[in-house]
Image 1 (cartoon, one colour):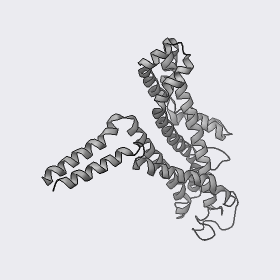
Image 2 (cartoon, rainbow, N blue to C red):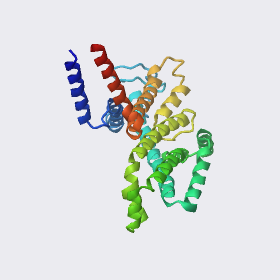
Image 3 (spheres, rainbow, N blue to C red):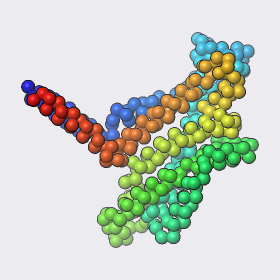
Length: 308
């Protein structure tokens, strides 16, 4: 009676071992959500009406003519959502790339070279780390009238790279003392080549997690700035849609179709990116990687003991 459960459990375990460890259900679900939202932001703007076109059909509920209804001034909500998705993703990607570059520069370069340069980089990173991010963004945004996309992206990137730089520095300090790195130094390899070939590949999982986290933070930060009226001027984003919905009293007038879609997109993208980040953490952290296997082994042992 105990042979079949044991054989089935061994077959399932062998099948799971053949699959790549990073192809987890969490990663596939999160990646699917992010891909769908990205495709919507890339393709939908080519097939929707002008998001700024004003019509006399204000505050119309969803219909065959306007799938997501209209705003108070008759603008198509679906068209605004399509362009806002592209705008928010653009801001998020620019900020994530800039934050990743800054964190890698100050964290990896300072951690590998050491000495006074590492001390200076660490001091600067700690100063930036203790700066209050949201108040700083509010102050800068309130004093600048022409708030373009690049300016908002720079402000968000400046306030979001320091924590990742500290993590990368600690990992670099651990890696630079390993035998293969010391062997490269003895062989006379240039520092930039040692960083690019020997150190950087070992930091890719950590950098991927930092990139995803910076992307989430950037989109939420931009949405918060736009919601209070300090966001990007002249570009549709999810935050600007919520800002105009609030000013247009969409909640009071019952126009749920105006503020629910951008809020749902922010929540969906944040959830998808969080699932991807959890999957990356499972790859980086050995405890998170081995915990599910240990739990499955314990459950199989309990089943076998109960069957016996």
